[in-house]
Image (tube, rainbow, N blue to C red; front, side):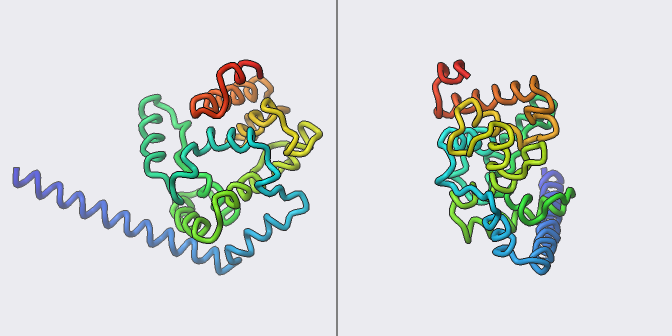
Length: 227
């Protein structure tokens, strides 16, 4: 028993050291990114876009579709969501796949606005610090708008306005439930789910979005079935 306790303490210390080292690296990585361009300037690069769509210009069905699909506890947690991370880990282990992410919408904004196409573990650590900075300086609604205005929707559309006009020839405020649920599912994997790339997979993804909306009480099953 004493040996087991010693091994547990040693393992705990090692994990704490690894976590501490990782967070230091992430903080340094984020800080170096801010030296290139401050966070406020990066945000202004998005909000000053010609086709920037503010939160109050987005239809409720689209907002609900994105939240239900990407981060259903968005308004109930901070920059990161430990419950979401644990749930994603469990789901991936259970299903033997890695379809669930666990990143919050704020973390995805950090990726889009601060780190862009960086793909490494250090960037994931840096995202945490960027996400906390975003939550400290901007409201949830503002961060949500940053997300849909900095996400890629396939076919060369890099914001919700361009995607809405490109795919449906209408402004975001006029999107129907069918159109909103389709676009809400695209940024997860634009090369796969863009309606013009693979209509069948896009429709399957849309069905997933609608099911999530039903699950979290945004629409009824009858409304989902009508799409």
